Image: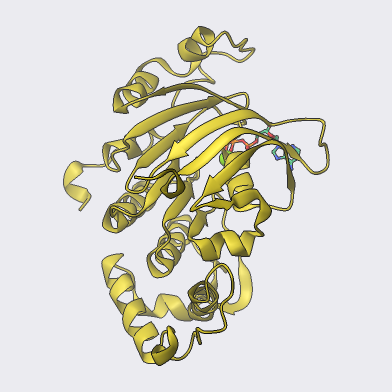
Length: 292
Ligand SMILES: Nc1ncnc2c1ncn2[C@@H]1O[C@H](COP(=O)(O)OP(=O)(O)OP(=O)(O)O)[C@@H](O)[C@H]1O
Ligand SMILES: [Mg+2]
């Protein structure tokens, strides 16, 4: 593995655009290599979504310090669409509805854009399979394959993006996008509420089906239990804008047992919230046999 294959985050500091003096992330160091699954856990409001947004270039946040490099690129210099073309992908904690735009058109446009690469090469004609593109027929075939992989109904793609979708359907769509775009760095920001067994299973099965030696995953989750099904190589605890602890899977088990309180205190952080509030939610019970 070379340095350029790894996503390298060094001393990352991030603030909201509306209050640049109020840094949410206060120096994040993280490296994610191809084929690695890193879980990020942490109490509500610790900065997990902010990290996901900063990685993707959300316009609501300003990077006040540090750097991000990947594939030999200075990621912070790239617009969000270029980061996506480079192979980054973000599954949102709270996906947005786009009434009027069908799932199929949405994914086709995103895929076409991605096929032209980060430098938008004109050598590629996204609609011409002879020129590096994907023909409509091949697109449909690929969509059908991925729908089958995620065990989704084909009528799903004719619906408008997230319009009237249940929590589980929103999660399915995030997984479908990921399956179709085949990113090399997936940042998954898991929702902490309304996640029933079905939705949890969709995420677990979806991610497991897509794991491969070139894909790096940054899995933000509130539920230790999810990590029984998506096995992380590394677990990080994010609190008050810093990574306060990094370990293996046993760290997630310790969190389930003890909540965040002891680890935060070990890191010398004052916590003015009760230990109950720092408990790690178990999430819905999922039988191992249910996950494939
Ligand atoms: N655009 C913003 N403007 C002002 N404050 C913000 C903004 N975005 C985030 N924050 C604050 O930064 C802190 C971290 O928010 P963030 O959403 O990153 O937390 P989180 O770890 O994802 O929480 P959760 O577990 O609830 O999803 C919170 O106190 C939040 O209110
Ligand atoms: Mg969040």
